[in-house]
Length: 190
Length: 268
Image (cartoon, rainbow over all chains, first blue to last red; front, side, top):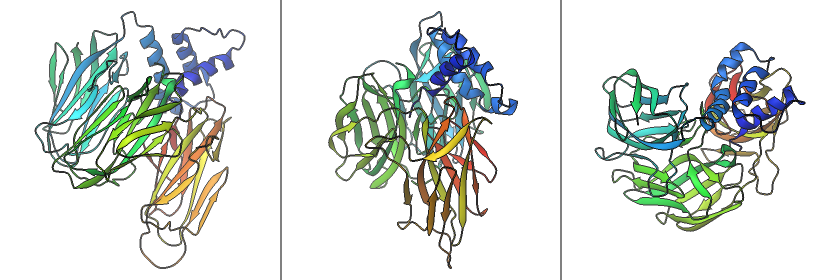
């Protein structure tokens, strides 16, 4: 099913609102802004609920207009000492022009989950989408290694982690390292 | 690559051996695995994010990675001899790609059910694999309903409503192409414990047969919704039934959510 619906939706929203003025090459940033203002019939509560959905079009548009070249920057996330039946969450902040990515390069490893200290990954499930990443455990995990990329034109990345007591998340870029506990915000340079 | 030429993929692995290295390698140019570009409650790249823990909690993975056309899975030596699990991810396609080819390296018993878009699943075994890619449809989403806690003599009504006053939502049979998956009904316990299924534009009605007995097997139903206008942002779903029955819904590639007796919101 079409993953491009938000973009399509914002484009059709523009043409529905002002058919005479809708040029084919409306800048993406204007499309996103119009999509935000378009549907007056929607209640405030609904807009609030759907804010992540609307941001998606704005995010991809703003990434495209970034003055810096958008590239994939490697990042290693290490989750240590994550206790049983808990959840570790790493989220990119809403105002960032950045998404998690599997990278552009060819080769064997783009995005990977692994462990070197436990006999297996004791994860009930895990999920990673463009902004969020979580793992849920059913047994104590000494170590979960996640290698991925951040697709961005920014020189740094801001975000948030949400961890149970005792767990530590370490983020390591090519030049910088940061370790976090509990519910914390972070900023890391590439 | 733009997000519009990414199709969602669900891979259901069964009978995967312990302590082995598996891979699914796509050799068609212009096809690559992806985690999708969507935010919010998108499924993205996920492992065992299903409505219930149908696969149980067993040590299974040692590592998993993908890049380009290669998806690689290492299973643990601590895993059971044969195990099952579910992955979701996306395939990013160059504009002119309509088929994919490649190969799987799996143990002999293993089988992968590959659900590409809203197409009937392809079965992939060890060796060469291929699939014809489904066309993209924008005004239709699959709704995977997982119904548990059923008892004899229960009536269950699942209703959909549009997420805006001027919109409209209908239950449908899904996109119309030759290999479309369509509406499907399965059960975790073998026999489907239903005496009635009614599927109309407005509502889905399920009834279990009356009689004695405890909890019946869980029922999984694949349904579809279509909507207008095209820019409708979301739908509401509700399940009117006995409080003991729980219904989970997964709309398109969004994460599964419990449906309550009052309307729950599902974005597209």
